[in-house]
Image (cartoon, rainbow, N blue to C red):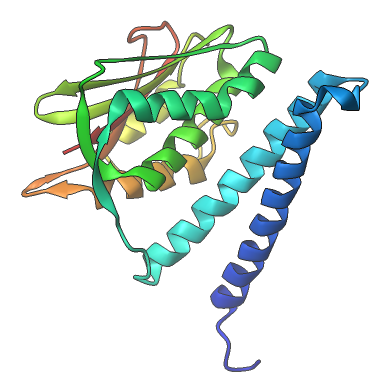
Length: 227
């Protein structure tokens, strides 16, 4: 045991916890979706599912960052249809949004395609939607467009928007969170998204994230720019 690195032990423990949470989520989903169970408070059960999914996403991000730091992360960049991909992401997050009385929709050209690691980008979007659920008043929208020779995937909400300190910070492209930022906006999610974006390269161009307020919806707008 003395020869083991503490970070390896921590990563192994996170992996075990993530597997346990995945098992809990699978059984919880079966429990909620089976009408024969007659759950007394379906909203409470769905909120429990929401928090368990957020915790699971955080653990996946930690493991991915660990593999990235250890140079063990293998990229699998493929060509993907954006409309199909965004519909999958919406379907995976729809039940929780409905429980919270939030509308979740996607907007995309049906023929738009892009080259990216499907599962890594899915992790970024799931985390971003989870964050948007906390701030949206009634609506969240995912969209994809081609702009300036980049594929731009956006997650927007109709809440109050990002605080100025967070907007200013990302203008410098660090992806790090300063002391003055709203503690409700987690450092881990933005750092994860920034690192995943930077892994995507095409020649001299590199992926990045941007935050803005008031794009298609009036609240916060997260943007993932992929070359």
